[in-house]
Image (cartoon, rainbow, N blue to C red):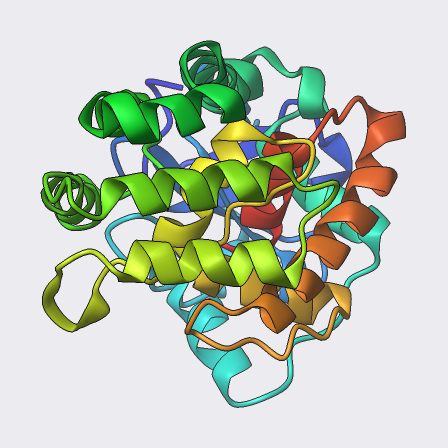
Length: 305
């Protein structure tokens, strides 16, 4: 796509029915393209900037596309699409329409090579690194013999250069600082083992895990956020636990008609509803080659971004 830049007329290589589009924004990793054949609420597509996805269209001008006044931010989000839903209720999506959004980003769905190399493979690698070293019985043993070693294993699994679950500028350093408090690590490791060993996620073990994380010495309980609470269980058991990014999770739930009664403070009632949504979506994507909550979380992110 090296010849494609802001102002270029293009077509989507996998979606010819979208017709001619125009590039309105470009960053290092994304482009924003408006397609005239799509309805107004769906016409602007933010997509990965990669070879073969878009092709030059055989036109030199298009009065309709040229009449559009389009603004986007530095990462190619269409600002009109971000601002307007705050004033009016977002239009609901069927799960099939949500799947179209996912396919607009990853042409071949969950088997797409780009999806696997940029999303799933990273999570699978983290899962392997974590579970090969920390099964629940070993968590309990290390809680007594060497809690710092268990903390280091979790931190190493979370510390990735690409697609990190926790922010390297804020969240991960806070967790590193917390785990240096060896006094509270044993209780945290036992609470994590209880959560992972439970027959299924439940209020008692989840709330105990949240409390154990909050017991570390941090300013204003900065560890008790949804990403911090859900990252490790998600990597350890992607068949049962779901990583929660508040903004994209809430938006996807609204668009798909799930009532989360979301509370920004991690709690069981909200997490139970999040898991219900996740399991519902998992059943939907399994016939489409989705495997577990790693794929569900990527699906939610694509719908809710």
